[in-house]
Length: 113
Image 1 (spheres, rainbow, N blue to C red):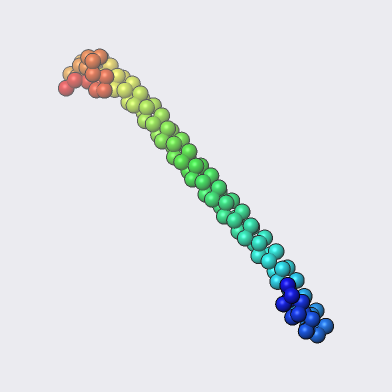
Image 2: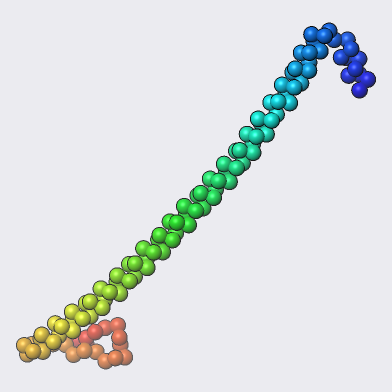
């Protein structure tokens, strides 16, 4: 500290004021720098959260679309099964040679060839 006082004591009053002004300017410049770093970090965290939220929305939408397609395919399968039964009934009434229905053991196929 003795060196500091000797240094300041040798300065003129104008130089002392300039020294203190530059010191305060340096300290004042550190505050926006620190605040900028904090804001940058907060924005980075917000963007990370937003990206994760958007990805979760996309994943949930994909699941809903897949479930909707599976439900639609099930309904179409039921509709075609009913349509095949109606066609078979029409063929039987018209005495057209129709394939016999398969046994209950094989539920995937509707008719034997």
